[in-house]
Image 1 (cartoon, helix red, strand yellow):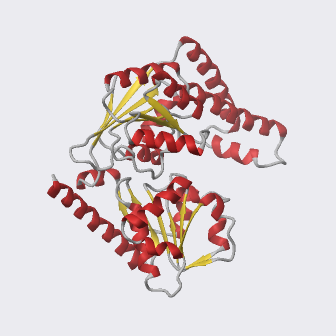
Image 2 (cartoon, one colour):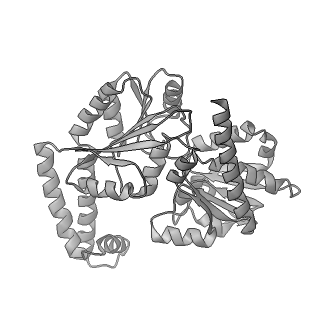
Image 3 (cartoon, helix red, strand yellow):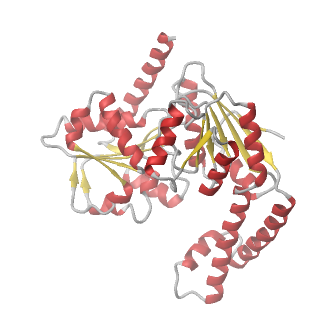
Length: 391
């Protein structure tokens, strides 16, 4: 077993060196696109160490989306015996870094860079200077605007997909089971009414560019009131339609059944809304705890520690577990809330695939059949292998 783990670590080391060499050969300006479990945080730490070692009184900045990742990066520096670098490294969240102005850094690392490309956060790149830029994410942004911005800031220099990581053995193999659930009669009626409203406003806005047109009209105070009303109605119907499938009662029933059949597993649950995450936890209490943005810092720390020490074996989240948190012994996931974004799906699946000898990650995705959610799911898993559609 030990030689097998050593071999996996050797393969991972070689791939990380390859990625960093390509970044260096691109004049230290580029993006590493790598599936979860590849070790992007280690790449960031080694990049900072390399640059700071060659600059007197150098200054490095690592941008992350959450406080948890701030703390995790500090731990990673110490893990690789590079804690001495921290005197010259700032680790900030995007939410505060965009306010910085007139700072110069010898290197800037953007972890989960897709979250730092919004109109507000990208001010950092115009208000500050840097000699070297390393951006990292699991897959390229799907929004064309963000994709083009990233290609200008830091062109892709290295790419490895989640399935390529699996093939190399540096993350655990996985099986995905897409499991349909039905709406109750009352939910079906409500969904039909809301969907009719969605279609009505969609045609008013223009069938093929309704989303872009609605976005434009909402931001245009001089637009005709009737057009702005259509845009508002479109967005409202879209939100209400998603809420119906996110809160489908039969998802809770299916969740309970999966838990009862896998009571010995270490399970991560994901939903599409914080309130529904709490409903999932309530349905299997005291086996589970919630981890999401509405919970206090102390509660989240307790939940994470309780899961890691085995006090509970189910941890349920909305988005907070998507990025970066390392939970290596989780071996099953139940996803109850879906968007059409491949990135979100890959991040969630990746939480289950941290390498352990003999581990196979099992992921069940609950979706409302014959609804928009089914279409979202097909788009979200299109880049993944080993996807099984259950009846």
